[in-house]
Image (cartoon, helix red, strand yellow):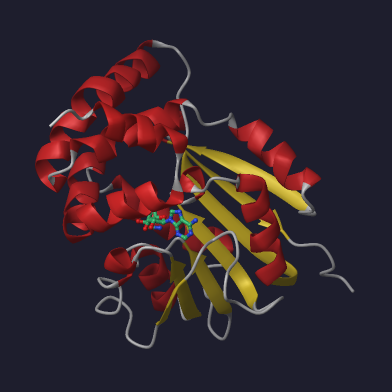
Length: 240
Ligand SMILES: C[S@@+](CC[C@H](N)C(=O)[O-])C[C@H]1O[C@@H](n2cnc3c(N)ncnc32)[C@H](O)[C@@H]1O
């Protein structure tokens, strides 16, 4: 079968194609993540929890594009009441075994079935890159966050074009789709990862967009020489 049309479709970020891709790799997603990141993804999720406040006892957290629930599980361990939202049923199906009292909802990050101002903390790990309209997603994240609440977005970035950056780019384009393909059984999913990461805006541009869309403060930190970034934003209205 010719893989070209599928690759082309993935570039367009058609939600149905994206959903189908995550449905296909859902069963092997966690293992592929651990191997491909060498476990660093787990450390990044723990960092999100620390930046959210560390002890989240009594706080409501919504993890958007929660996938198989790893970030939601980390929020749960920190004491939060967690709601996970994702539009791929097959990814969500793996989440309940990780979070005892968690709640899971199948829904679109661009129009979530969640009340206005529900959450003290809203997180999104490696999900924003996949939505077709990130500005609409920012507005949705803000809508479900209570005044003064925190929104934390963990997403891949691109290192500088020094030696490390050049090696990483080459790994992303040539090595990762092969290993990811073997681990997940779906090479196209990892070509998609490469193309979306390479096309992703710089962290400061993303922060600017978030401010334009209504976040009161936006800070970001560079992780592992720019392979990922964590944006931490606050919703307006916290001080009354
Ligand atoms: C790379 S996975 C990240 C999963 C999880 N947050 C993590 O850190 O492992 C991206 C997830 O985003 C979800 N997703 C993509 N677009 C979405 C949308 N518009 N609405 C809801 N979920 C979406 C996919 O179904 C997938 O589970």
